[in-house]
Length: 200
Image (cartoon, rainbow, N blue to C red; front, top):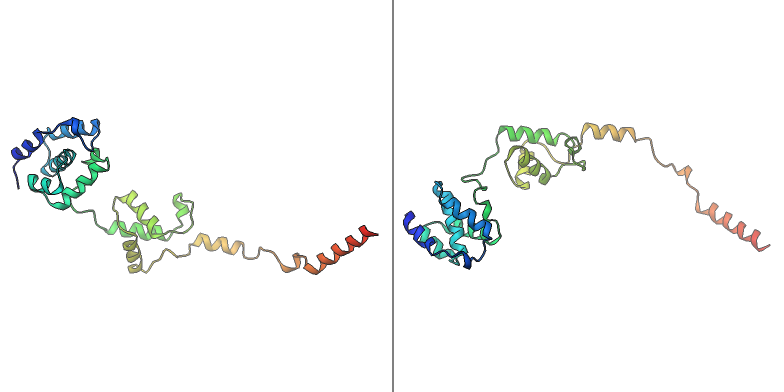
């Protein structure tokens, strides 16, 4: 891995007038933060984005900074997408994993209607469970993983809720009965009699 002096040499030739991706605000923010005492991981993010803004290729950036291709590719894509100002928002390291609290909350949610939590729909989907739990607990997992966890617990998003069963029982005897409908024969007869009266 290269030392910081060679990294700063590469950035000394940085000319803000020849910026390829960064807005003036983003460029100023990155350069200002580069002057602070940062963890090496965050410093490398800034350097990757600034070098990409200078027009350096992924291979050149990896050689200059001694970083992985994956890291360089990610932060080059961030600067190209106009998201360079989010350099410190993506957490370092492994993502949080599912824990006991997550599993208990998942079980609690799936046994209640989403309407109890302010949603307009009446049945959970794995996608909505994932979104809700990510918001509540900050742990993001895929829909497929949610379905696996539900299956392990013997649960499903297709469950019936007690409240829903009561509503079904309440409306069980309500409906239209056949005797309430007019038959087509009666209508045709009435219509034909009306025509006879008009023609006479």
